[in-house]
Length: 409
Image (cartoon, rainbow, N blue to C red; front, side):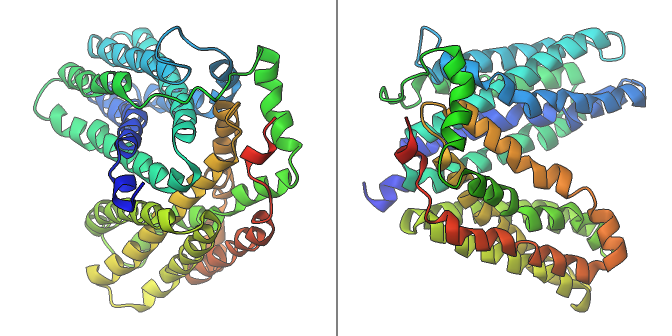
């Protein structure tokens, strides 16, 4: 296949649209739902509990073996589940549109939990589907398009939904959101077929235990997990404190909105696309090296920002470089994780690996406020750069490990 045919293939369009399907439910269960509840006068304590709707995304690995083991009697092992979960998501969104949050919190919890469970389950299957229909050399571009589709969907269910809420009642907004999610079901029906060579585990016990046994009996399994834990740790720690840092050195909230959020998101999406396209020409291993180095160097840029003129152009330069490099690193990182999965246990292994991927963002980033206070901003970002080095150094040994396709049993 020629280079341009790889980039503009039907499979790559599928990656973009499955990313949209995954990202769309997230904000309509988060900030958009909270805005509606606040508008209806719901108590802040109950609004705060909305964050618990994210639990299915954290715990999804618990039922991922069921989705590896069992198939529905239509569309194949992955597409069948995708179609079912998309119908459940649309049903749940429409269900939300029929209630008043201030009058029936029980119904709100039921429909919201249905959406959350179906969305987390859809993510399991889409991750497995992406791994199974793309060859290794296309995983970088496919993953970046998936992430960009995810971000576009969040704009639709976040910013666009809030705009609509200023024009029409909230119930009507959620009806529109249901209609905006519905096309994902019809696209799933015509999405590329899965390969028949990926055989499901023979029984549920194999589906539960097999992914762990297969992965941890590989040479260097702990080394691979250490790399996943450490590759993005510096980037995640720095990102956690970027907004307070920018405000602290004199920039306004408007500067953050226009540069760090809007312009920064464009840079991140562009970085993902550039990284994915480059990976079609580069070895995945050297992509991880190059993009990882760029990630670390771009983080260091924040330590220089206080010494640059207090101008939007200075902020834009640092933010663009950091977000571009982060997007490239994410493309390679996601592709590497996908390449580690054994295609017999794709859903379960990918769910476990992505759970581990969240550790730097959720746990290791938690003390960054204290660290920046003690170290000062400049030394904090220098530290975030240095802490990225162990992950890069691990690549020397990770390069020599066999991929999952050679260790599958």
